[in-house]
Image (tube, rainbow, N blue to C red; front, side, top):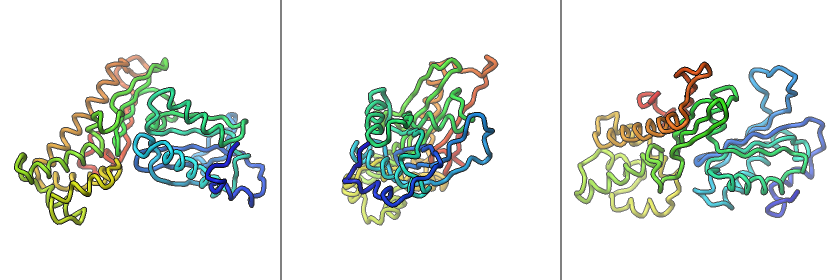
Amino acid sequence: MKRYRNGEIWDFEHEMPVVGRKVILGLDGGTTSTVCICMPVIPFTDPLPNPLPVLARAVAGCSNHNSVGETAARETLEQVMADALSKSGSNRSTVRAVCLAVSGVNHPTDQQRILNWLRDIFPSHVRLFVQNDAVAALASGTMGKLHGCVLIAGTGTIAYGFTEDGREARAAGAGPILGDWGSGYGIAAQALTAVTRAHDGRGPHTMLTHSILRALELSSPDELIGWTYADPSWARIAALVPVVVSCAEAGDQVANKILLDAVQELASSVKAVVQRLSLSGEDGKDSFPLVMVGGVLEANKRWDIG
């Protein structure tokens, strides 16, 4: 078990008495934020309490290595786990299991790299699990059962599905360069493009120009180039989605089309997963769980595609 960054993250353990309470860590890591909770171990023979007891909760920034790089992503993951343990009065010796559900985990090699890294942080007795964040999102709406389809639309987007017999499939989730246009980043990037096109005469006039410039405290569309490339992080761009929604609700046709196109993209992702898996309900009929999460789907009820 190693100490990273000269042990700074785990310094709190030196002053903490050893406690007998055993705990587990559950982490949901996304492109906008990362949340880790620390819970007591509950024996399988015991009924699950409602609500589940949470000893501590810690929040940090982006942990998607495709967005911020592997080093920054790992620092965020380690810090938020340490914060949750510290707040709960626990340390790594009391941990029995760690489950990371992180966006950007798209291949078994991604899982293995994170597992190897976790093994250097936690004692050898700790059970380690790594999944894409879509798996945890689906489980959150099915009481833990991996069956059905989940659609995440936040800064990024992905559709992920499981059949009763364990087959799985995904659509989208490849990042903005490869076309996740139903995502918050995709919506905002198209809005910025629309402003640029309107400014140079290639596109129609749009309310987005005034609204985005006001939100960013800029005086001219020419300044958008510098603003965009000064820090093109996915979450920073995606933060403009509420501006796009407001313009659409005010009747702007350009903003309205951007959102309608996003809805079509999200629906296409779900449809692709359902068709590939021939998803059906537990009774073999058409009904199956569909879980929808993420800021794009939850932030404004008038644009809730559910």
